[in-house]
Image 1 (cartoon, helix red, strand yellow):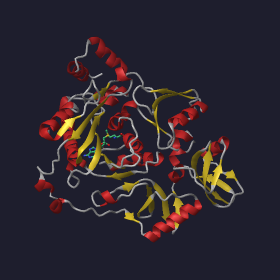
Image 2 (image 1 turned 90 degrees about the horizontal axis):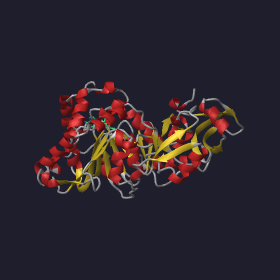
Image 3 (image 1 turned 60 degrees about the vertical axis):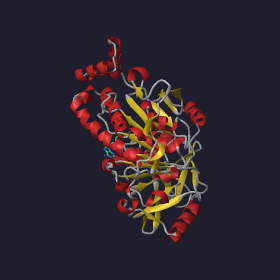
Image 4 (image 1 turned 180 degrees about the vertical axis):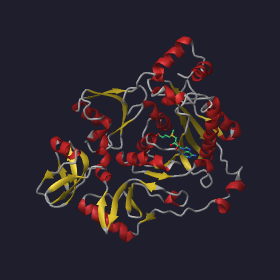
Amino acid sequence: MKKDFLNYIQETFNLTEKEIKKFKEYIEKPLKKSIRININKIWVKDFKTLATKNNWRLTPSSLWKNTFYIDRDNLSIPLWSTLEHIVGLFYIQEIAASGSPFYMSLDKVDKSKFIILDMSASPWWKTTSLSEYYPNSIIIANELLKPRLKWLFINLNRMSSLNTIVTNYDWRFFKNTPETFDKILLDAPCSWEWTAFKSPETLKFWNIKNIKKISRLQFWLLESAFIALKTWWELVYSTCTLNKIENEWVINKLINKYTSNLEIIPINKKNTYKRNWQHLDFTWWFFVAKIIKTTSLIKEKQNKWNKEKNIKFVRQNIEKLSNKEAKNIKDFIKNAFWYDEKYYLYKYKTSIFLTNKNLDYIWEKLFLYQIWIHIWELKNSEFLPNFYLWTIQIFKNNIIDIENKDLDKLYSWKYLKTNKKDWYYQLINKSMPAWIAKIKNNNLKSLLENNLIRR
Ligand SMILES: C[S@@+](CC[C@H](N)C(=O)[O-])C[C@H]1O[C@@H](n2cnc3c(N)ncnc32)[C@H](O)[C@@H]1O
């Protein structure tokens, strides 16, 4: 273990010899597997019943109410390959990673209609959690690096995060969105201290100079977030690091610059900020702070943000469907499977996206990279249903109940014989919408995504 790092931790946090020994010991211990139940899709009590049937043992975590440690005896099928995981009933997630959405929402589902920005969202965890805590809000998941978006997309699909859109901004260079968002999560890029429990090698490049450099980026992002926040609303800042340079220093810089415009909301009665320690909380290192904007900055920076002069209206690549187009698609889906009028449809080239939100408020403000979820492809004026459409809910038409042994065959992409007519069908197993199958010439073939096939 890198000595500089241990010395820094011991000195900065005043740890005794016994404490630093325990700190070091725990870095080498594996973390227990934990999951978060997707309350958009299943009640916690129903998931517990399902878990008992599967012989999965859930132990509540001391931190959040939808989050459990999980133990299984039969490990022949990896947890990610179980049907319950594929259809998004739960999320395999480290406990600490629930921290920032948890402190934003105080672990309560809020039905208000907010505009929430998840400023650095990839690879995956926290956006889907925000979508569950704020089901009626629009969640904007932003990520700078395009290659990192792939897993975000997969998870938004799998968890049916229907109220989410994705943007691809470098949020340091904030220009067009002052005072736009009701809540912002900045889960900042950081020095990756937390990965030390995977391999001590990751601390090889740990040095104060590097950390100060990262902390400058973090401050730019935090300042942008603060500017983009509406007055009287709040911003949560988090990192996966313990050091104070990426945490308290960054916050203090903001406090010094905007002293009369903000307040820090203490995380609880005892602590202003939350810091998770592996040896105390049995989860990885994590830091969370909560800031409220008490006064608008617009008056002070009137010239800079004069709406008439500076705000450019965005032209989207994504299109709204014409009434005729939308009607055709809705009628088709309704007759073939199911459709609910609460949804909105959008189009990008040949892809059709379904969302449960009207996006007019942000339409001219933000360039939308993708809208969730992706349900269809238009090919030669035919609809090709996308895999994840089938996991949203049980349909009314064209469903097939399927037993475990047949599902197992489909997992490995084998055919089943059937007398049903050629068409797409939704498979149901144990009252769960499984996935889509296509029947052609009496052969039922599952259209399971490549990465989910059991080989
Ligand atoms: C700690 S990760 C976010 C983890 C994510 N919230 C989750 O729960 O899985 C930080 C992310 O910030 C992104 N990032 C870095 N610089 C950025 C910038 N200038 N603007 C927006 N995002 C940025 C990184 O690519 C990285 O994916």
